[in-house]
Length: 221
Image (tube, rainbow, N blue to C red; front, side, top):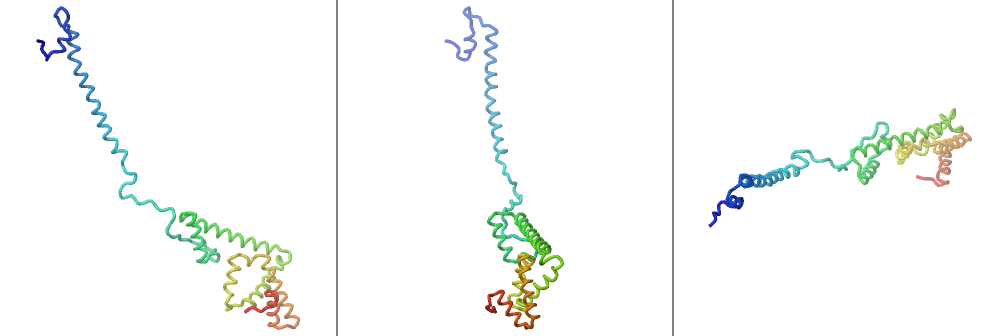
């Protein structure tokens, strides 16, 4: 009966009963090669085990400050110096609603206010230049024009009048206090009042003339 513990030696026995050296060498080195092959999966598994630890690291480390929201809870506007007359509290509230509707940041909303202030300042200057350049009411006649316009305002909306402050604020805020059409209208009205008084009329007559021009003859109280 063949010895079961030496299958490699029996497989290399020649027909004449002798064992070759080459066959013996091949038989003894084969297990070593097999052992080497079996160790590769272990290394691959070890490398794979370390990969998740690197890829699953949180993007934000613990303790880092949270990202700032794009739209603030409340906008804090700073009106440029010299432009305060253009913005009341209600105006700033309206701009805040526009900014929130458009998802503006605090910086973007502030830039919007500054741009609007610059536009209004430019408008006032443009109206003023147009009035100064007018051949009838501007130039050498500008001072007289302004005095006549002021006379009307002082007569119709004198200090203490219930609507005096709101009227003057409207002219200043809109810039139309410098507009040639508004200035010319008030100056013409002031000249008519002056002519009526010089012709023997009284202050009350001048007041009635003002009411006729402004309100079509119906006195307003």
